[in-house]
Image 1 (cartoon, rainbow, N blue to C red):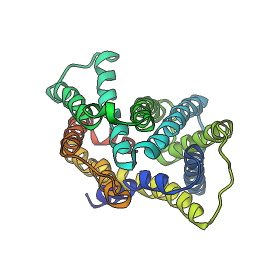
Image 2 (cartoon, rainbow, N blue to C red):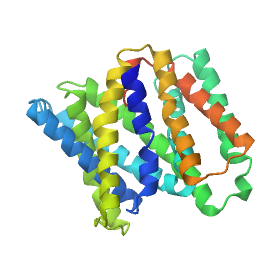
Image 3 (cartoon, one colour):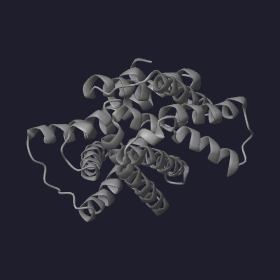
Image 4 (spheres, rainbow, N blue to C red):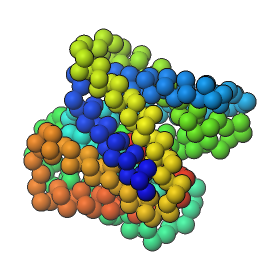
Length: 292
């Protein structure tokens, strides 16, 4: 439990770091994936675990990197538009989208947890965003839409990531994450350049943010979470993982002085309850990459 608590707490700062940097949102993702991917690749190369036995692994990882790159493009902009707390809650709706996918595409049975999680998530989303929708400005509405779109893209990324870990000749989890991270960086760089964002990092503050984001989320937090999940049953693991969006919401209130109504707080509770119910239908081993 200790490893999972530490990893979840560390990764909850990801959206805060994105908000604090003056680098463009796409380039922030580029440097995060580049730093994290390079460190992981070096680590796995030293341990001689970074070699391919099947080219299919490479193609699936590249496809997973494509959807992660698109996810980060939209999520990072959502963070700037609506704040790190709400953006992190929105991205965690990937659990609900995955639930819908396995029910519709894979025709898995409707369990009570799945049946409850979907309407509860919609109710929470309505309280968070729908009640005051007409009062929001264009950028805030755009941030909400971007956050939900990022959740859909992240759900697809997770499906591809799991495929890359189960196909013939699969790499170790850390080596696979290094490959996906580098592929994501390779895609985010050109996307950011087309969007007019600069590769230049100005000042020690932004250098520190980029380094902290890449190392803490990709190199430190992710292995801690993966190790912690192996020691816990799904119900307890899913509950602890809720700390990530919950803490991100708290950091948004503390660091950026975001005002919150009682209705929004109820929406936060309902949304996280739906995320938890959705996570119950999966084993701890499949939750390892569900944090963002």
